[in-house]
Length: 304
Image (cartoon, helix red, strand yellow):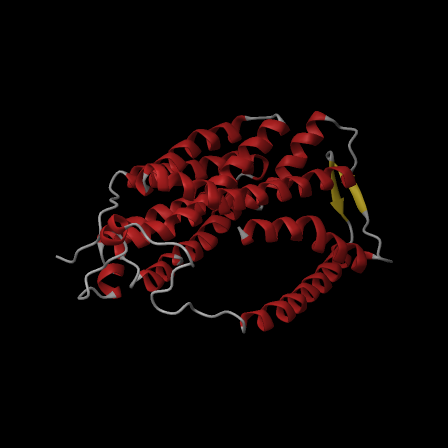
């Protein structure tokens, strides 16, 4: 949830305020070329962004480091006051064999399948997150050629803010769904439904439909992070969960490399249709993840 709300606050509050502050007194010169505005003095924009990111770095450093000192792990066996875990659940889940080690889990086929599903869901979403604003602006530009750059930029920033909110909501929503329907089925629904949504994104010219579909993609992107911790707990147990979940987050790191690199290659190869092919590439990733969900299991892991 913090990820989504943080992106919302950053895109609509902190970044615009700092950008306007550092842009004061600097004029960015644009020239219209083939219906698109082309920046003529990129060095001015680079100077603004350098100061902006430096300021954000200082703010994050000042806020996060002192607050980190207040974080403490709860004592062993801690439960919230007034809450008693159901006996059946306590016996059935969260209990790993005392002989089981983290490396046994991480090197198992079940871990690799979970990693693959998580990686596909993340890569498909993270590949297009950076595309949403320019693509959204292009749709509005085609729909209404009278819109100026400032208005289009505001539309793009609003979309980023709204989809960031859905990113946060997805962590609660899909986590709740997985409690009701099961972890495996939830990932099947998330990935399977995104196949249809990505195909629709590749073929829509309506900015309102585009925005709604993008919100759903971010809902599922966040949903993976909201569902996977419980999946790890069910399969590998509470004792090994910190290490196993920490390792499975490498899928996020890998997706953060593969997704943007993939989009960069697509943009260089098909500059006029980059959005279309990026959506199709993301479709392929969620399709692979969807097929992999049929091999998943919620049963506790046992070393053979």
